[in-house]
Length: 242
Image 1 (tube, rainbow, N blue to C red):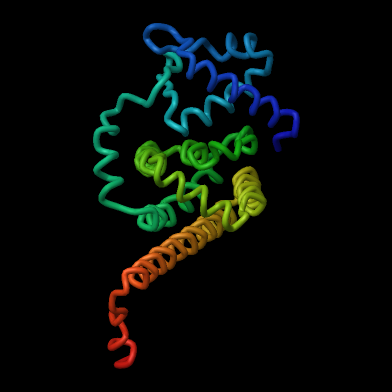
Image 2: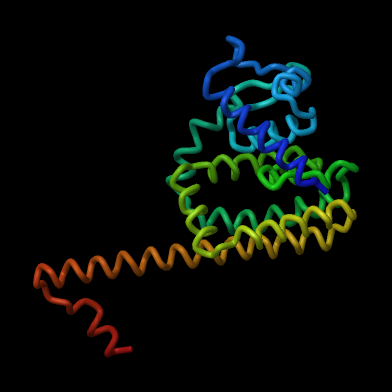
């Protein structure tokens, strides 16, 4: 399991790499230096750099081409032009329904196929790394579509509000570790159930925050009617009939 020191080194590497990307300090073709060069420049281990790059890849800030290197920006896969229409045609609850069908199966496959280093998964890139460990490229492609939709700024704000309102960070970390431990133990049933419980918790938090938003909107509409002196009759007759 990652030590506090390794986490701190990875966090440091992540911040330095984000700074590198913001400053545009990459080759003209967008290629980043090698892991070895980055580790020397930043002053951390190659493992810390690798884990930081995994987070950046999950965030869509870099992409990697086998045998060629790591490049700045989102992967040029033609998906970006469709993400906007996908976001407009769905909502976070629908995405959670799909995740509940796919990710427990990915966790089960990862538990069967993961190698000895899989317990080193870092929370920031956990879900995509599990998809990678599952060893199924079609599953990984589906996951990447879901993940790109989840990166929409408006949806990121909703997720962050849900986490903060529920003060869920400690529980999320505990659940992540339970998933990681099950995968490391090559226990598919436990890994799948741990992932399912984790996603159900996230779904419950989303339901709670979206319900609060609806209540606040309804309250604002009612106050607006009161200020304007308009009739407040909508729904009264229906309530009596019920």
